[in-house]
Image 1 (cartoon, one colour):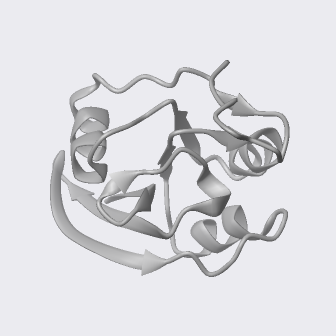
Image 2: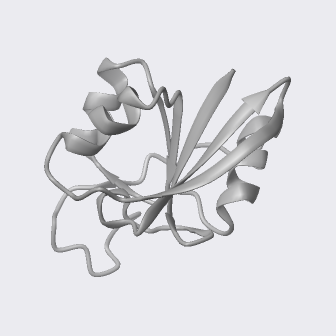
Length: 119
């Protein structure tokens, strides 16, 4: 089984991972979503969310943008990171499963964001 976490604002992929409202968690079996749930973001502290999602058994994280520190921690834990996603969280998870969602490498280097992610 694969678990995909999509950093979201309700049902939509969020621009910035750490400041998302919730994570939509999709459980995958035989390339199909068999279960989905939404969990509130427990808080943005450096290094906390990657460990939190790892403890939940997440294998893939999808977001609009993400800081390099979080990406490094996910990589250390063997969790795949896809950034540059947008639209509905479930559609992003389905696109990942179909092999059509590719990471753009959109890394946020500052914590002042203001629509600078992805440039």
